[in-house]
Amino acid sequence: MSQFIDILRQHLADFRRRYAHQITPEMQDAIHAMLSCRCNTARVSCWGCQTCEQQLEFPLSCGHRSCPQCQHGTTCDWLSKQQAKLLPVNYFMVTFTLPFELRAIAKSQPEPFYHAMFTVAASVLKDFAARSPKLSGDIGFTGVLHTHSRRRDYHPHLHFIIPAGSYHSGKRQWRKCQTHYLFNAFNLAKVWRARLLAYLSDTLQLTLPHQSHSKWVVDCQFVGKGEPALQYLSRYLYRGVLPDSSICRHVDNQVSFTYQDSQTRCQQVRSLPAVEFLWLILQHVLPKGLRRVRDYGLLRGNAKKLRQQIQLMLAVAGAVFPMLPEVKRTLAVRYCPCCHQAMHFMGVHMHHRPTGANITA
Image (tube, rainbow, N blue to C red; front, side, top):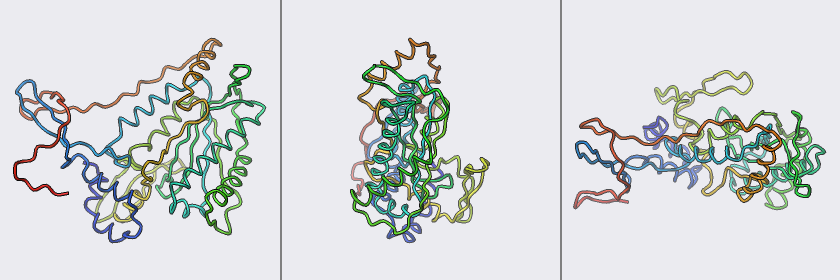
């Protein structure tokens, strides 16, 4: 059983009383999914022992993207697909952050606000690439939405991983960026601020605060090869925002968890009352159907043929493709309680309840 789900089960009543008017339908769905994960589900996985013919049924996992027990396979699949897109060039990571003054609006209207962040940030990157003398061509990048800081406070921001190069369709040529410098972060921040504020007020017609921080922050870092950046982005994609391994203490209605301080790079411990801890984590549940990972340009799904041509061009030019570790999916293994041999998976079926049993919604 997940530590987080166990804490949720113990303190759910108090949590609902405390935050009754702030719990969204998406949070309700996430709570219901996590509490029913791997227990008392309508469908079950069936396993049989080939040695002693023992047959057992096990409840299924919920599959919710906020559940800390689920989505390991989905994360592995995404990482494998992204690794197949890697080019033998250097990479940059560009991070677009949101000032404190706008976070309340983002929290109240997350779906249109997050979409606006993706739309505006992508347009900024494309325009900077088109005007750059080092690139001046088509680029590709992958964006990931994170809604939390390392302390798990609400702090929406976008990470983009960008191969250092561009493709010229007219010349059918790949232009490689040789330096450790891509874009001026200060200029990125100025354009990001102006365009996002205009989009929010003109397109979404949102009422913005009279005073917004004049200096916004955009970070543009050289990260070397793309594999480490992909590993970083994959950590919080599909398995909630706090792994169980980070929860170090739950005593006397207090929960403590560890995190890495962004300034000192040292491990710190944060402690909160259990109910406040639950809100800290559940406030990051995303709107249903929102895509938190988006590919653009040369990395989009329908650019596979072009991407393969670029990879071939780079290979002919002498580029060395790194040997990437295989992303292994962890397969479920069940052992027979009688003979302790590995059991055989027989499929998924509806749970067979005893005749006359009460079935409640």
